[in-house]
Image (spheres, one colour):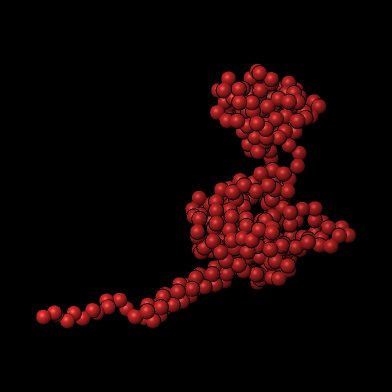
Length: 332
């Protein structure tokens, strides 16, 4: 005689599972909303709207943020470049004239100062602690609308972005937090309300390709602008572009890379000309540091090399030569 077996389902009813998932999703969304709201309430008083006037042209606008109690404001260079007058609006204190302390087009950063007692400063974070996927909030003034907030995540780190001066900005943060015209110069902040970047660009028509200059770059440039009003760099008086090196030369001279900085033109009586650099030379090293292209060349020609005897390693035809050059202060 067969036993009658009863099959009992050990799983919960589908409706119960769906309800639990909906509850968890609602809780997660509520927690996300609370974080964003708290961040916005914390940093909004430090975010400013910037309006510029330049001669007879219509004024431009952008965003910025106060990062010191004595009224220093960070924004993008392209927001204030060429402006005769700059004004800022704060959420708490209203409108103030701003003084342009200095700018650095190579990193698209500028420093302003407002004389307003009691301004609230936002805290600067640390780029080394940023992680892909973490929550970020962007605050700015797109299209003149004051204090517009978007949120997203860090999509990628270590990107490079070409500035309006043609130089390469390194260690750029990519985010999917939407940025629009007028967001430029505003802060990108983490869940603790710390600035981790300065919003600078959106690549159109691509969706979600938005970029911010990392805060450690910002702190370095800001310190130079506060001290000198400019970021001092050296130059050797050449025009160059990244170019491939003949594979036979790479093997023959034991070069560990396949590209260098090809000299297109040499400034008459400039540092490179005095050192004997010729058009057609390929620069492959500065003081034994590899030069794999023009962007690396620009990076190595920093303030520390001004008027300092510096060894250039070049390829000229089949030969590898070592020349001594004295880089000079590059004019802004």
